[in-house]
Length: 114
Length: 113
Image 1 (cartoon, each protein chain N blue to C red):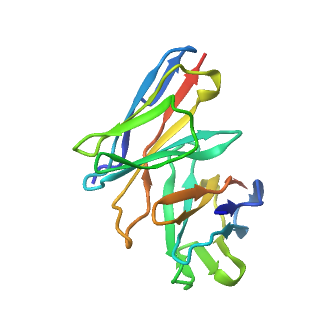
Image 2 (tube, rainbow over the protein chains, first blue to last red):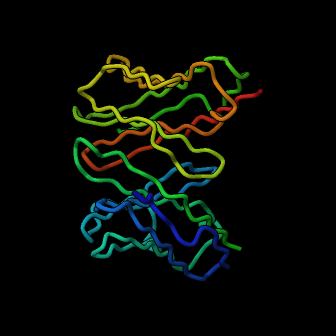
Image 3 (tube, each protein chain N blue to C red):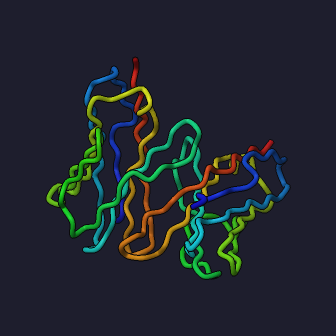
């Protein structure tokens, strides 16, 4: 089974621009979560989508948004980029079953904001 | 408050030493799940183990073992006979309220040859 894939792997943007990151979950996984990882703040939860609906949201400003499509693929958008948005963005998918609820992570997208 | 504490920021050992990574969690939920993940330099988090709150049985998988103790709210991870390839950042995580997930700050393990 193919793992979680994320595109692009690396991205360089300038302040004020917007960016869209993509995540394809493991086949059959309907839950997709996004995390931001920085050296200072560690791994922080952004949001979770399940069946095209945002089910959970972390404490991030409205500039961070996401969506999920009917095939469970998910996109994350960050508008009006700031220098502090430079981070590794990780996507994770899971089966969403009580017996099998571990998340499997993709390789991440490293975003650099100049 | 729901919280995961990994007090050890960095650990350095010499190959073949045993090493234990500590994880202490806080949650009000009676049903919760604990996880360990490994993040090698490549960046991708690799799932290692899941434990639910009703299963305190310890687990061993090769050189890896986990000790779950509800009485002390701890879920510690031991690597026996460490190898250079074990060098990575290890994260402990807590899932509570069925969907919310909280990660610890991570412990960077360096295994020197």
